[in-house]
Amino acid sequence: MHQASRQFIGVINGEIVVHTGVIQFPMRKGWKRIHRLVVLPDYQGIGIGMKFINKVSEIIKEDGYNVNLTTTTPSLINAMCRDKKWLLKRASRVKNTRDKNNQKYYGRKEHKELGSSSNRITYSFNLK
Image (cartoon, rainbow, N blue to C red; front, top):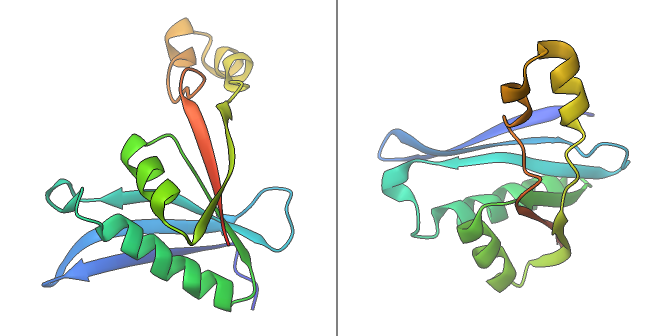
């Protein structure tokens, strides 16, 4: 069954502590992207995010897809570089193509700054 996107949650003692979505990787047939990992602050830095991502990736891989995760979050980047299940495919600055679109739709310069990752290095990992 083809699914455009899926949502996953992790629960500890009845409380949702981690969430992510999995979406179709744009322009890449057979690929899914882990998208928007969120870990509650009290649970950050203790490995829950990586364990969760690895479990979600196993599920997606079992469904027959390749898996990608792209991030600018330093702690996640460090954890993924250490994890032997992931291969770093790209580390570069992303050209912000939203500048023109934001000005077009909003007409105000302050919107150009929203959501910009052009000043950060973006890391892209593929599940091995």
